[in-house]
Amino acid sequence: MASVTYDFGGAVALVTGAAGDFGSTFAEGLAAGGARLALLDLPSAPHLAEVAERCRSLGAAEVVTCGVDVTDETAVDRAVGEAADALGPATLVANNAGYQGAFATLVDYPADDFRRVLEVNVVGAFNVLRACAAAMNDAGLGGSIVNTASMAGVGGAANMVAYASSKAAVIGMTMAASKDLAPAGIRVNAVSPAFIGPGAMWDRQVELQAGVPSPYYADDPETVAQQMIDQVPLRRVGTVDEVAATVLWLLADASSYLTGQNLLVTGGIV
Image (cartoon, one colour):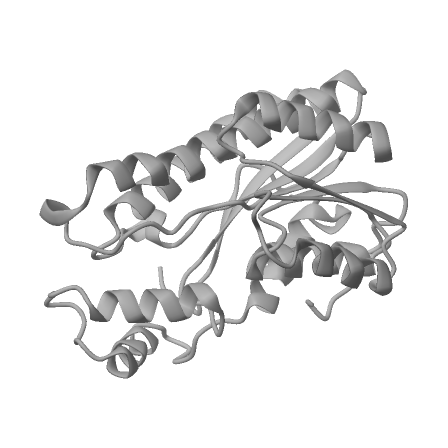
């Protein structure tokens, strides 16, 4: 959990991808600030109930969970509505659900996986963004939405054409949505982490990059990990807590004059 705590007392927050490394840490930070929480993830996602229990123990005023596939527009609308019925409309949203996809060079990248990555990371993010913004509008409330993008969407990433494309789209979506929603007092920002670890995504990325014949990375995961770290001016990977600290600040009133921004959480990679 991020060490900085903001006062989210009385606020309703919704987190997608809540069972994962990022989502659970975002949720715990919101819980520590006293928010009422709606935690969304796939019905098959492990550990969602455990995340909810940790959030209760950290001080969340109330927690509900919902299994939902963000690519299903109807299911997202229903989940956002059910969360609002239970807690009130969410005014804080961590739009975080995502899929990293395969690792392969462009010419070898599987087209079906490319479509799946865009379906989850772009269409899914859009479904959540639209449903939550509509609920805020209907209730006459402002709010803050933070989309999880990636440095891969800013500078590209070798052997990750689908993921890089999807996160570039999320950044563009953030900028466009911020203009559409500003008149309603709804702020929309994004965060773009680079190499973050330890955790499942870091381990998967290191192992799968090592499996792609490439001029950019070696074929040994330990060497790949060091090659990644060598790209970072601070010479270390970031932590999930450091990403969460940025997300929580963007959700909090402390960042009340920021919208349409994409903050790079990269250790100096630009």
